[in-house]
Image (cartoon, rainbow, N blue to C red; front, side, top):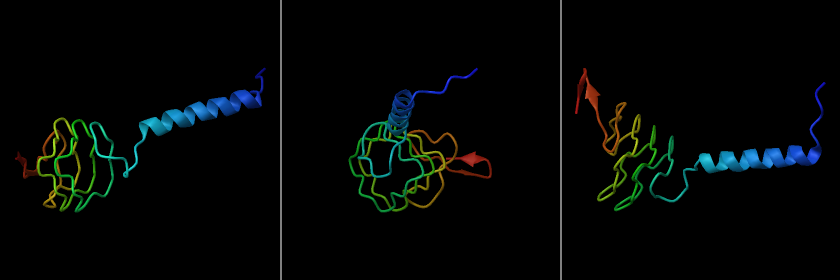
Length: 106
């Protein structure tokens, strides 16, 4: 026989779950910094000069026209991102945008 959860315990469980989820999911307006998660964000024409984006998650992020001069992208995941020149970064684009055409990657 299942016992119903007490209301206070239920509320505490929900609050802990929401707190955990919000710490994992990042917003597109989070400040630039190491390990930021900007997946699926639009950052076209953004001024990201000199930013530290080491380990950032930029999967499927639109960076068309963004200024990344001097930005540190070491370990940043750019898989599926739209690069500053409009090309799509291939799978395995870590720290740099890799483009593949007809099986040749550069």
